[in-house]
Length: 255
Image (cartoon, rainbow, N blue to C red; front, top):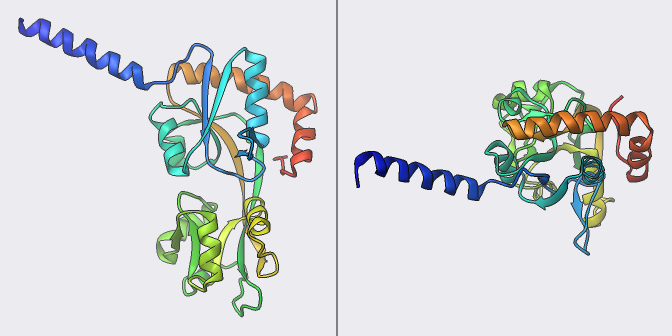
């Protein structure tokens, strides 16, 4: 076989392999994320629930798309959208680093209160000054962002990283950290599930507010999908259906 034929054969084979690992784009939308209380979850019967899932399901129906949901560890879900192995990521907060990896929807669809939790009876306190967090042991969740003020001082604060929110709460219970930085929506739900409501306390002032989005992979098909879903989302929002869905689930909407 000539060198040219070998090169052509190799190129065709590489293309077939690449296509086999990509989700289909002909009306099939793969949506990924991790467990976010009331935003993206899977109930015991296997149904995907939460405001993010409900919104995508409605947008897909309006657009005539078939949608498939999957839940993965947060880092894996982000990687899949960044590397075009999935179309949509549910729930990320927007940061410059993430904007380089995928394209965010025009509007956020929920708002989180970022706050510090401590053990009840603990003598630690927080006055809103991030410099005061340089000494105590502060726990954070792997892959989460906490607002521009915190992120600008993360390297000097040197927080202790927990792989999941449940792990972070267990670290706080075990006195391995003094504070846990998290969001109220997720934390209140997990504290209730763990049965430790009487042992945990959220303290003020709040750290920050963070808005969560749908984020899309960076290719032409995803961009076309984003533009269409942005348009349909405006209709959902203007018609009042979004507000009813959020109220039912107890999720804050951005103004």
